[in-house]
Every structure is written in C-alpha cells, then in structure tokens.
Image (spheres, rainbow, N blue to C red):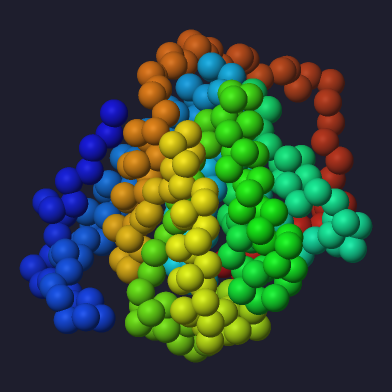
Length: 282
C-alpha cells in the first residue's frame, strides 16, 4: 500500500498557526505535484480493483465551509472513470422530498456493485447545517441522531464500504479563504449566503459537530479527521488514507491490438465547405 512521508517534501520555512505555535513545513509545489500524480495512479488501480471485485464503496466528505472538501474530491476523480466513481452533491430538497424519510434521496444514490460514490456533503446535513440554521425541528434532529448510527450499520451489513472524512479548518484560515473568494471573480460563486450565515455561528457549528461525533463516531464507520489548514497536505493525506482503507491488488490489463481502419474505397466525403467550423481564435 501507499505511504506518504511529508517530512521529506518540505520547504525551508515553517509557518505558524493562529495560536502562534509552529506548524509543520509547507509542501513544495513540485513535490506536491509529483506525489499527487503517484497517488492518482494508485487511485486508478483501486478503481480497477473495485470494478473487478464488484465492491460497493461510499466516501463521505463533511466539514466547515471552505475546508477544502471539493478540492480533494476533484483530485480524487481527476483521473478516474465517472461511470465507476461518481460524485453526489445534492441540492436543497424539493417540497416532495421534504416529506420523505430523511435518508430516502441519499439511498437512491448509493453504489451498485463495482462503483464508488463520493458524497460532497451527505445525510449529515440533518446533523449539522439544518439544526444550526433552524431548517429542521428539534424532534427531527433528535431522531436523526438516533437513527443515523443504525442506518450506517445497516449499510455496512449490506456489504457497503463506508468511509467518513471530516475536514477541520481553523477560524483564521476559513476567514482567509472566504476573503479570497470575495475578491476572485472565478470563485465568487463558491461563497453563498448560507456560508456567510454559518460564519456568524462558528461556535454553534462546533457544538453541533461535537454532538454529532458523540453519536455517529461508531466502530463500523468511524470519523476520520483531516487537518485541512493546508490544502495541499490535506489532499495528499486524505487520498493516501483512502487508499489504505480498501486492500487492493493490481488487476492486469488485457492485451490490446489496434485493429486496421475500415477501407474507404467507394466512400466520397461531402465538400468541407458545407460544414460549420468553430472559429480558430487560438
């Protein structure tokens, strides 16, 4: 299996956290790109093993806004087959979905044999965002805390490999990332009104997360916390850890011989002037 030694991929200057304590060294961009490429090769091997063995894998990504969940998911899926590895990021439930069993629309997204599904936020909205923002009743919240562990035990008993990641980001780093989004027109869309409201309720989210872990950090599906103050290190650490959660072996590729192209004898192409081409501006 893969092993990461971040200590050997460092720059010369340490950084300091919000409390003034020295943090670990930054990862050099060159070494980050090299290690990411290696891990992505391993992900391709894992994908092939999942397909070959008919595994059903669910990976949940949760955490505060701007903690880097989307960036990790993007690096995981970058080299993979979207028909095997799917990303699920459900929006606000419809009026009809609001009347359904809470887990119902997530169950519809669960993998079949030979698939891995990455949930960019998940059924844990009911245990985090909804109670903090007042989107659910106290009764609905308490029922979620009771039923979620049993729901996940049922998933595991059914043969699903369930892996849960919580991305932890400091107050100061989240603020820096929010400010960066405000000033970047390409990423401005990533900062929603809900994000801004959540920022004002930092402590409430901390309390909700503590309660959530107390109820749902179960033996068959524990929470794995990713230190996400450094995006590069969080990506490498999370991918390396994910690869360690599913024992896999290389699946040999079938020998492929490129066939000869069909003969064009008797075929006359229409005039190229009849086709509408995209202007070549570059």
